Structures are given as structure tokens and as C-alpha cells.
Length: 184
Image (cartoon, rainbow, N blue to C red; front, top):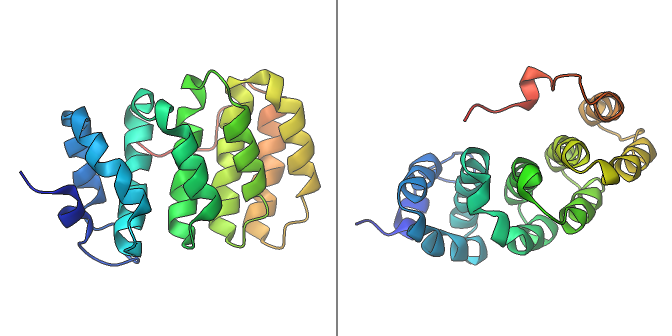
């Protein structure tokens, strides 16, 4: 049996490496999640980035597996030096939105990511805030206010996503744009 850290070493920060393969291994044998999670704290940025990608895939396919790890994901979303790790954590929290009993910590973390230096982190945080607001309507008004406050983002793509997100939160029956949804 291959070690997950060895699989995650493959490639560099511009590639996904073996992240999908690692996610598949963990989804087939959930006990291996205990081997994957510490990789988020690994000193090697490639291992952290690929681990974050694998965790985002796992959260997308089986969000229940990750719910107990919300705090760990929040910490990485707020503190990792590499945007790729932060945006995968933001995405994972959005995938988990329907399973979270207490959405406040994840919502707070995502709202903080609206100020991230990376437009990709900001953009995926907006997606996840829509998921939080739709799954936890008590959070929606606060999220809408925060999104409007960031409506003049210097990135045209983020500004566009924010405008769309406010509409999606106001009209919960509107489907999410296809580009916002990754296939399982």
C-alpha cells in the first residue's frame, strides 16, 4: 500500500499531481483520511496543495467525511501561504455547507477570504458563501451585506461573481451557473 505523502509529492504547484487518485483511495477506504489530513500541515507546499485538492474532491463527493474537520479546513484557508491551498479549502467548505449544523465558523472564515490577495480564493469563497446562505438561510442576509460591501473588488471576474451571488441568494430557486458546479 502506497503512502499518501508519496503520492502527493508527484508534480508541482502547477499540477494536480495524484490528488484525484488520493481522493479516490480515501473515498474507498475512509480510514486513510487520518493519513491524508496531516498532509495539510506538511512543510512541503506541493504536498499541502495536492492534499488540499484531494480534500476538496472528497468534500464534493462525500461531504459527511469532512464535517468533523471544519476547524482544520478553516485554519488552512486562513493561514496557508499558498493560494491554491486556500481556494481548495474555500471550495471544500462550500461542498460541506449542507452538512454543517453550525455554519457560523465556516461562514466567518469565508467572509474573511473576501479580502484575500488571490482573486481565485475570493471567487471560490463567493461560491461557497452562496452555498452557506442557501443551506443556512439565517446567514443569508449577513452574507448578502458582506458581498455588497465587496462589490467593487478590483477583479472583474470576482465583481461579476459577487453580483451573481447576491441575486442567487435573493432568489434561492435560481439554479447555480454551470461554471460554478464541479462534477462529482
